[in-house]
Amino acid sequence: AQSVTQLDSQVPVFEEAPVELRCNYSSSVSVYLFWYVQYPNQGLQLLLKYLSGSTLVKGINGFEAEFNKSQTSFHLRKPSVHISDTAEYFCAVSDIQGAQKLVFGQGTRLTINP
Amino acid sequence: DAGVIQSPRHEVTEMGQEVTLRCKPISGHNSLFWYRQTMMRGLELLIYFNNNVPIDDSGMPEDRFSAKMPNASFSTLKIQPSEPRDSAVYFCASSLTSGSRETQYFGPGTRLLVL
Image (cartoon, rainbow over all chains, first blue to last red; front, side, top):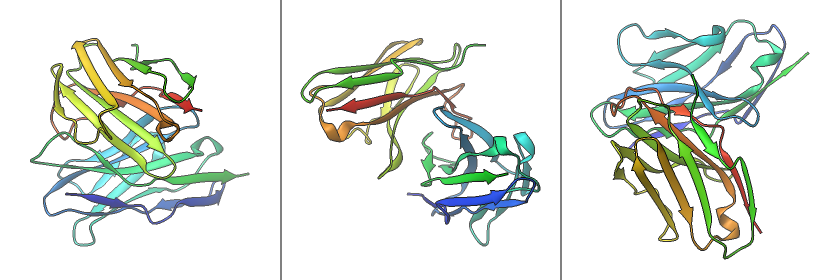
């Protein structure tokens, strides 16, 4: 079984500042890693995913994430945030060899202050 | 292109009533997922289908919940009888194939309140 821990439930930052949202996972098998974003009153939307290859993954809206196997982490970063990035961000994993089930973290609410 | 469509968007009902949530996946997608989102438990997978066949329903809370997918373009999640603790946002998602690497595309959700 897999589990995902998002270390911060809320992250407030000022506009144009950098941000890092932390994600750690636990799994006895190899996993794929995902970041989804949920804007207010909307469904989830994929930001990026790590499947294989380069450990630095670039996604939409200027976000990127780095897979660190030794630390079992997949932290999400953006060098300069905008008011429109205000949303909830979810890290998720799925078993490479197993069923098509996503296990989500509890989410991190990113609030951008002007 | 139309995304995943869910109806209704909001539902308010009284305890004991039957509730039916509906989902139309993206055309051509062959996997469909039902999730529940609450403050306490976060996002939980309830059930998923592949080619209209239920593959894993281990997340369905109890016998009061049932889900069907009669064809590739329609699925329902039914709660009978409903209870206040069922209040949550229910999401439907679909993906192109059944691989665990596939992106899931989420609908806007149905916000359910059981009084």
